[in-house]
Length: 146
Image (cartoon, helix red, strand yellow):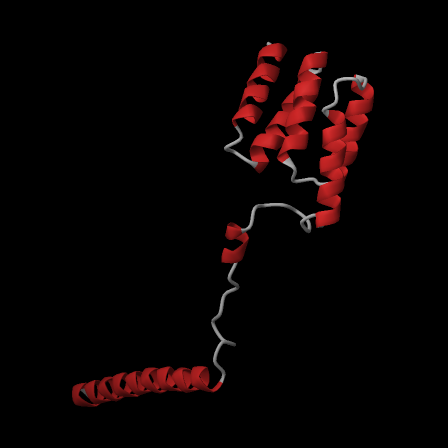
């Protein structure tokens, strides 16, 4: 019985290794017949290269219109409410525009509306972390809040 048992175990091990090798060979052949369809994970690397903006980038026309509104809002002869309205329209036209958020944060800080200034300064810094003026306005807003 011991010889029979060892022979049976030896045979099962050999069949098992053959089955493993045949399955590996079969999967290799299957991969060659259908390349790219099996065992492919989606590649999300392109999302790391693009700034995280939840929409389509604005058109050139919208960017130019937003720049015109920004230039009008920089005019000191306008009242604060009018310049805030122009800046709000510019943000709607060009959401990833850093200068618009920066100017609006400066206006909010000058009016003593530090919470709104902090929101805009944080948005400015989140879009462009190298914007030194955005960090400065954020600091001014936090100092104003105490």
